[in-house]
Amino acid sequence: LPFDITEGNVWIFLLLVAPILEELIFRFFAWKPVANKNKKAAWIFTSVLFSYAHLHAFWFVAPDIRSFVYYQAVYTLGLGLACGYMVFKHNSLAGAILVHGLFNLGFFLGALA
Image 1 (tube, rainbow, N blue to C red):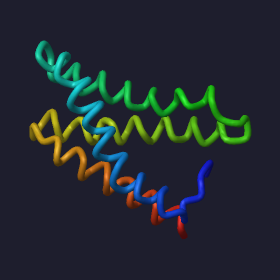
Image 2 (cartoon, rainbow, N blue to C red):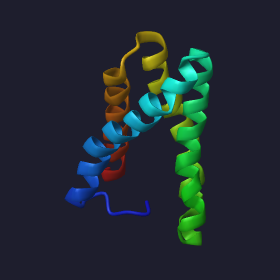
Image 3 (cartoon, rainbow, N blue to C red):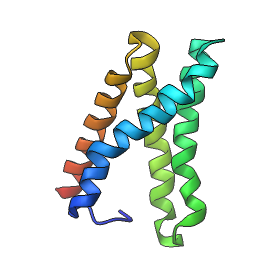
Image 4 (tube, rainbow, N blue to C red):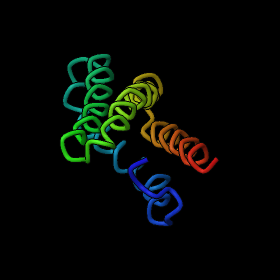
């Protein structure tokens, strides 16, 4: 991992800040304009945009970390689809934040193991 998972500020960001902030950005602000025309397109668009936002880090990290960025782009596409499903099917931003937070908790616990 390109960060120390045991640092308190990292896990606070990973478990609290990122799920709330990223879901507001992708499943609220980016979702609304597209969903007004096509809700399914909003689901796909915001999921791909979410993945790309994580892949974009590729250009700003050291070469030895780039493989992690590729890996992250793949799993964030799946996470984006799952979070988008909560908004698409259940119209629930809270559900998307919960799914995102639980995913990050699993990632956090897996990284500690």
